[in-house]
Image (cartoon, rainbow, N blue to C red; front, side, top):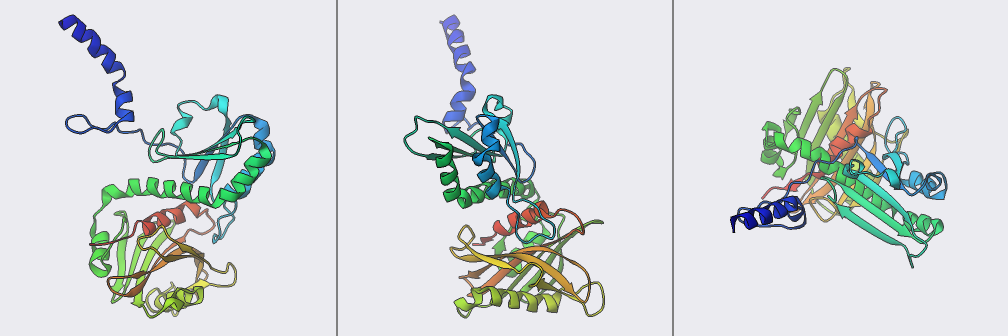
Length: 338
């Protein structure tokens, strides 16, 4: 009986990790932990069946949307960096990439099909497979769903950044935000509270070469007109002029409305069901400083206040997309504290 039991145990042991991967168990058996995904910040790996697909209309439409310029930056930078390999080279190592797009042209397919998998081979990870009977059908399907793809990959990038930041929370900054605004946010420990007042807080991270910062401010909510772009900009400028001075006397921070006019969009993946995101450039009136910013404005139903959280970057003559994406992750980590 003992020999048979050992032989059976070895068989079970060989497939033990597969059982953990496929099932969720309770008691003494724990769920298998997936490996951490790989890949540089803001990078998507595109898997094509052959090199011609990357060079023809399939590759062109992918680059048109996923590598389009990120709005609101001083220097041109794409939303995502794209790398591509052929399917025959798509080994287990590449399957651990954080963001993957798989192209599958199958003439036997009756119609295009989109499959999306979160944390499929690693974590965090977003894998999107598009199957189409022809290149023409692929292009149409991709165009029709491009914004959804972009948002899915953005969410994965946010989660990767937050997974790095979470271990340092809570900290004095997150506790200060919770105390003043009753908001839970994931803010790493290398930030500090630079200034605080009634309905306002300025949080900064300063190094010898760059600056990153967050402004949180609120006003009583009156009506939906306060969500207009003009109202958000005017309110932001008012708080900046009052609380965020520049280096020279009489200078202060403001939103640039000429070089890169700010753009707004409604977002629903925030702490509240309705919020408005604004992207653009900030500048210092009376000085020569500036850089990109991202803000999200929402109504806190507990206080009936309209709240704006703005993140900004100062990094002269350097790429800023990934630094702004870090602030985006912090801002979108916002939750209403219970």
